[in-house]
Length: 360
Figure 1 (cartoon, rainbow, N blue to C red):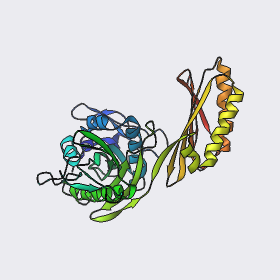
Figure 2 (figure 1 turned 30 degrees about the vertical axis):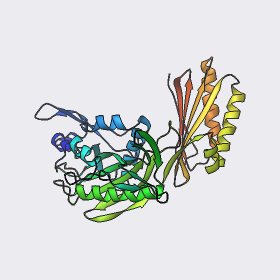
Figure 3 (figure 1 turned 180 degrees about the vertical axis):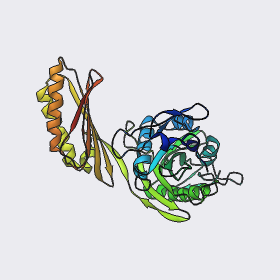
Figure 4 (figure 1 turned 60 degrees about the vertical axis):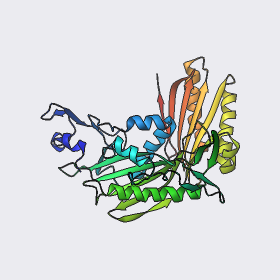
């Protein structure tokens, strides 16, 4: 199936990333990735017509996390050195609406249980009727840099599932929670069904497809959910592998229980900063764990500085304090003065050095 990207990329290699015009007068530019290991996009950017659906039914926190995962997990199969990436163009809004609807005789590709079907939650014999488990499907498309035809050469899809169900019975809302094992069983089967459906789309039969599964369930309303598994399929070959992503707020008891070392280091950092600047200062952490191991720590520090020197010195002090944290994680520190970000510190995983940006 020819990508919309292909129509506008014919002159790409000849132009080596410089702006030009095609026969219709449209400017085409290959964007330079901002850091090594990123995918390169092009402009004009071709938006998917499913964007309004995504924006309506997914939280801001989840949309960002879904998009990050779509790119990061794709890198194992579609190298950033070999592929451009574009917004998904195959799953249209009409197709998406069919996918998130119930399976029926007239909608065989529906990924939700058929109307009236009883669904076991995994909690003993507990069952619910008419749950909506699959709420969305996201897509990214990949195009090989080495080819001249610029057809789509690979696809990554993310199936979005909801383990927390509210079912209305006789006008009364009742809440149910699908167990992790039951959710994975259903979601991975839905992934196989989606892969089979994609093979019926023109030009997709033998294309490599990566399918991710994302659960919107989170431990706090201000946190995103996380990916729970993935599969990579070439032709009819492939299988799903389960894993777990989860975010925690620090300080909370839940975060202390899973990782007391990171918890205590952040508490110590907070105490040190309060001694440094005794007036109102607040520090909060958000930690991301993959299969129980921390991969990212985001720290937000809010203060009411009186002088630029205070802000500059506090930023330098934070750079020193994060050296105490394990190098196994990436750390991002946002420092805000009166609700305005004034500096950002980043330390990459596996590194003992940080980079600092002052926004002034």
